[in-house]
Amino acid sequence: MPTPVSIASGSRSVQCYHCLKRFDVPPRAISLSCPWCSKRVTLEDLVVKNTSWSSRVQTCGRVVVHRKGSLVATLIEAREGIEVQGHVEGNLVSGGPVLIGPRARVKGDMSAPSIWVEPGATIEGGYFQIIGPDRLARGPSRTPRPPETGERAEVVTRPISVLPKWVPVIKPC
Image 1 (cartoon, one colour):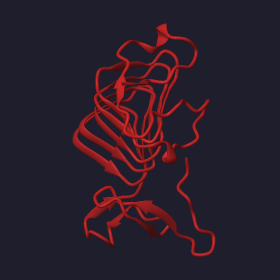
Image 2: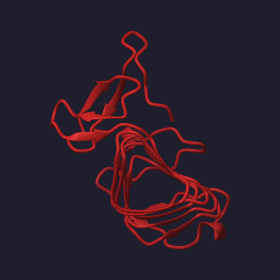
Image 3: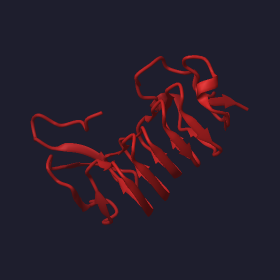
């Protein structure tokens, strides 16, 4: 999922993970200060291929955890989306879609506009929150029925491999 690039100005638009305001940045920039809140932000995609421990992982781009990768952090925040093929443990906050691969293991709370789970993935506990139907992003498969406005989402805590081919990970309360 590439970041939108403006052809006329050669810049791209990103969203600050501190103040959540959008602004344009040069296409090759990897970090800078937000013009709205003046806090430093990382702009590049973060790719995890091995084991990594951290207190916080935050980026205006995406977080991608490869099949043999493992990421353990208190907070994992990516404004453009999160893709998990390996193991992730911590609270996930995404401004874009969260894609969970067929052999992935996710443990922790999650907040995202949409969550896509492939058969064979394992979800361990946690609270999943869908931000809203107006912000759903198109994903690799059919669109699940989003919860009604004000409706809470609850985690289905069982391995996805025992469910049918495609099953949404949330159920309305």
